[in-house]
Image (cartoon, rainbow, N blue to C red; front, side, top):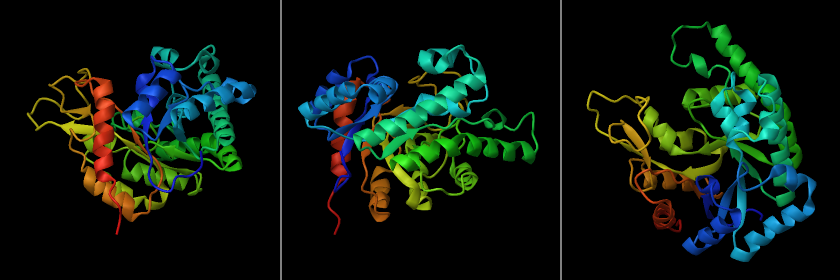
Length: 326
């Protein structure tokens, strides 16, 4: 499961949380994927993987049976919990019992941090070099700007992020694994400037970089191609998800208006790659220009399309963009 000679196309298994790993592996292979980006929350039990060698043997056997590779693990929920300032019923339903425990906040954060370290150790056993995920952010509640806070509060938030994540990244270093943080509202890095500040907070250590997912950049009004070139040496993983922007009608704003995903009244919605407004050809040309040869993973989220149809369609669109360089 070492590094590929070119960009393999993988399927993120998170949107298939309700089916066994064996089934989604078989489906991914049938659709023509090279591998899977494995969701640790649903398809890889990290505790069993670390404690029972037979469990990892069975996991590898499923991959081998279907001719699939793994170049990245995903551990979003635990990563978010490392730095989340407060927890509620949403986290109780999202986090596994061994992380949630009694729900006491600092205990949840500590157990989430240990789970991230465990993910690095399991990745090392599998020969996987990347873990994709979130970070949490103690200062996200202040993003809107009212009630306002001083710059000291914001600076303390980045210091808190560094204090919580540097010990995790130490384990990543020991295992030869990098963390691909997904810039996303709610996390310490969600746009260009917060990404730069997050890098500064951890002193630009090599283990910390980014998962380039343009879908969350698009609805914020951020240039996704510019993000690739600005952080050329920090693009550790690529997730392909598209966003369809509606013409401004003076009603819906970028915050979603508390309307459900897929609602046509929203100002934007996630769609299958190729059906939105992400400039995919420009993005793939930029990835080639920076020398990115890692996995390109489909993260399917489209409330207006069957997921099996979307997974196959997304793969075909990505294949059409993977032409040889001169």
